[in-house]
Length: 321
Image (tube, rainbow, N blue to C red; front, side, top):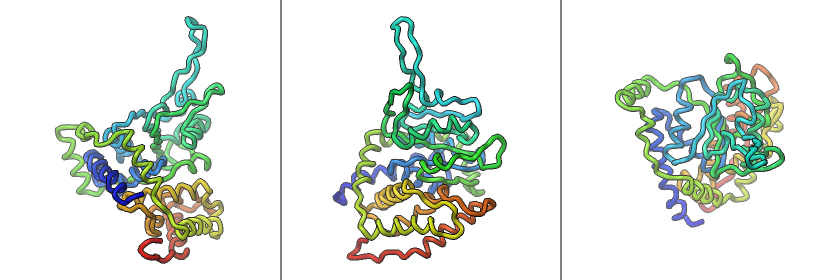
């Protein structure tokens, strides 16, 4: 891929971020990571306290990218058929007709995903892996591009339950928004004096542009040294004494894809070790199961940083590695 090809589509990155920032104030890094996952064909899990702007973030992206967006509040009474759809018998035609569920969109917002039943959560497994749903033995492809942004309340909140490992593993990133700082919170109040900031967002791209960006990202080159570096990082999680279950091969692929996306967002058509290290924690964090059940997120982050400092970084060779 030519460098000009990166520049051609890279111009959309800043435009999209600028529009989303109109509604999501003080979370520039968060915005960039969500966009990174979207252009890398990944899904995003956002875990944080209620009211910090998780839903606003998803809606802002749908507007800036002109994507068909659907939102579902996950409660204990939500059924799998509400997501996938169902077949209904039409007496007039004397045949069953498929009625698409909420998943048939380009950007699906699963709000408070850890408040619904495991059976309903499992309806997302095929969607997030294969981009399709199967109902009554018939497989239906979803509109493309298709991205799931799921939010969950912290474990221990009323009415929540932990997502199974197979579900967690299908998210490229697990992110946290956190509270805004004092100045940003004041700006949030000012921005809502006369108008809802979401209404000010202008579409600067569309589904076709996003698909083209994804194709450009997939062509970003990775050298053998970087492949080895990625594999070494993953392997280190499987042998660390504090980790019971390390990163899966699906996680290895996610780190590779996200590294391509990071290089693209930085204006390059090749991946450096720094691109891998920059997003390693976001890819690994939710995939690791620690030996100590009492281990918190800070301890998990420390282990990941230890791995990053322990695994040798490949040396540059002629400007690239």
